[in-house]
Length: 433
Image 1 (cartoon, rainbow, N blue to C red):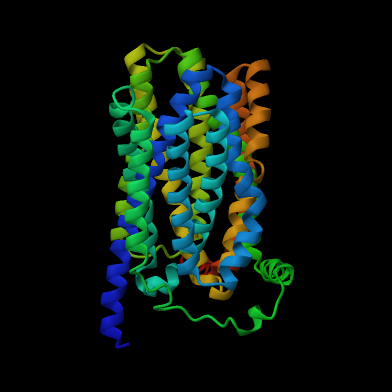
Image 2 (image 1 turned 30 degrees about the vertical axis):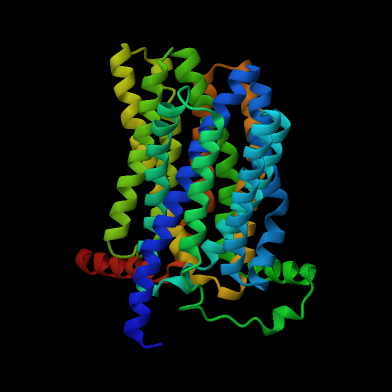
């Protein structure tokens, strides 16, 4: 195919990818909103609600390495389409069950587990295919536009879900999700996942699944930069348990913030993500992604600590509300600042043949300590004052990040940055003389 035609096709992919992600994510989050409220209204039990969350996390964690090996061995386009069709069938099955027998917790848990697996396969296959769908200069733009779609859905879906919930039945929510999933399948089927891909599958087809997984681990072992980021991701997600559990607990239970105002703070978080995604989609590629991400993680740690401030220095209600609006807006900005440069760096440094396995390991390790963190922090918030749990967790997160992403590690990844430091020192010495 001529280069000009390939670039036109890549432009089509860029926007089709975003629209497909927006539609499927929007449908998924409207569904999740309705199901969450249904479970809480039906049972009034936090345990039942947590069980549904576990059904979402556990299958992804257990099946992640297998998903990566499958993604690298077979057609990524087929995996995406089959996963989306399976999502449609799962929701259709839940709809039929609801209309004939009524909605039950077992049916919800089963559907949540299936959706967890299908979204994981689809997500890993899509992430692994970005360099095949989009030309190299626009990878950062594609990554940022993907985040924009997720942010749009995060802002719009609670509003739509809240508007519909209580006025329409659960089957209507399911039908919305089914329609969104069908549209996503149609859009994804028009994309060429190998437009820019350079993949050699001959040797992999001779490997068993277990050999393929071991080959992915061997490849990862020699990628020292990715290993450092993996371990940081593991620890970050553990300490983020302090935020995941503590934020809602502090604002609703300790500070007695009204539910609609709490929702506005969540909207500020999504707005921050959206605006930063727009910025990254328009600006040139980040030159030193590890440095940018390090600063972003340190900033996230600081914000986790700042969440405790109204517990230490009491504020009037509206000042407190404005404070958390600003804080969550900045939190959303920093999340994108951390994720986008690293995702672009991964896309450009990981071989296409190994992307599925590497991204699946990244996702598995990122989530591995999340359930444990939530359980531990749930106990800690019951035993100790919330402000000290947050402050200690924030301090540990910052210390670990600064230690693991120290200057010597960054200079290995970005030798140009090291060169700049050397030139700067030489100039400084010359001036001193």
